[in-house]
Image 1 (cartoon, helix red, strand yellow):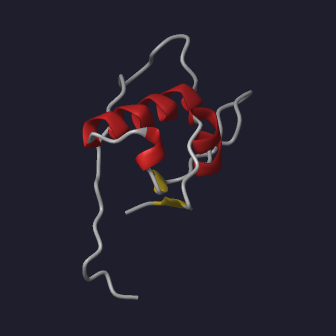
Image 2: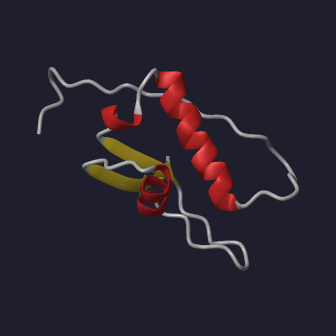
Image 3: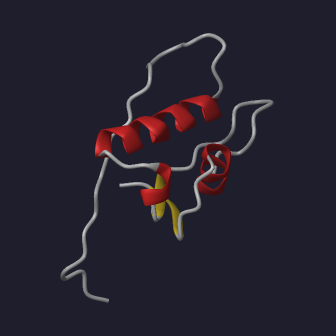
Length: 86
């Protein structure tokens, strides 16, 4: 598959760092994803792919954070979902 004449628009979503009381892992992922969309100047319907950074074991009592869960919680319907690490 050639990437010639293909484009990627990338946004970065920052969240608070360190110990942040009353926050879940999922809340950070959702905030970062929403911030990345805003940073890229995109609306939810513009998104056709979601790649979440590396999988971490869930914190006790929290759900497993997957790209599917992030997309579902934000009302996204990307055609491509992946979890990757550099």
